[in-house]
Length: 198
Image (cartoon, rainbow, N blue to C red; front, top):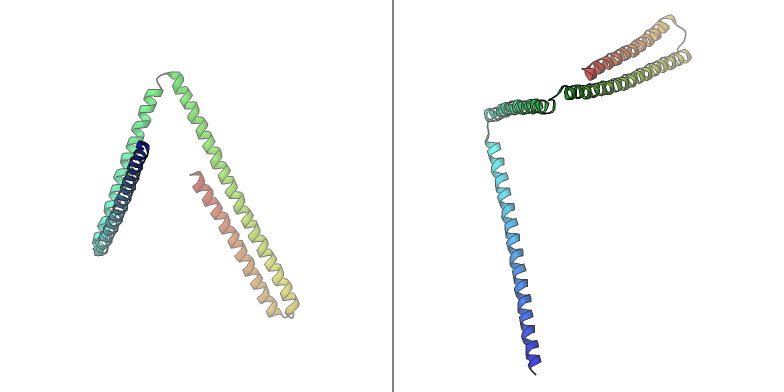
């Protein structure tokens, strides 16, 4: 008989533990949900306040904000550049203590420079070839159009001198337009090559 009493007590204790655990989980869930809701409300309130503040600004206030940001960017860029230079000098000072180290570093830098030059050369060559292909394609299209126009004119227009002059002028204009487009494309190629190398 004592065993059943112990079993009942154990069951009550287990059930109490389960209820306590469930209550703790529910309380934790409620607290988490309330915290999340509070964060949402706070974020929404901050966003609304920022929107109201932005809408209340005058054009002068906005101009001052932009000027301030420009100044901050300049100061930040100067500080970043200073830090980079300081770090480079410290690195050179610490790593280049001997003549051999200096020569190795110079050789590494020369190799990097030559690799960069090759990369620029490849890029420039690719761009020039692409623009040459485009110019050739444009020239071919213009030539086809001129030939097609001449064929159409020959088939459709009677051989009257004034009309022949008009057709020739149109063909000349079309050819000139093609040449101008080719010249512009070549100029663009040269500018891109120069800007890529520079």
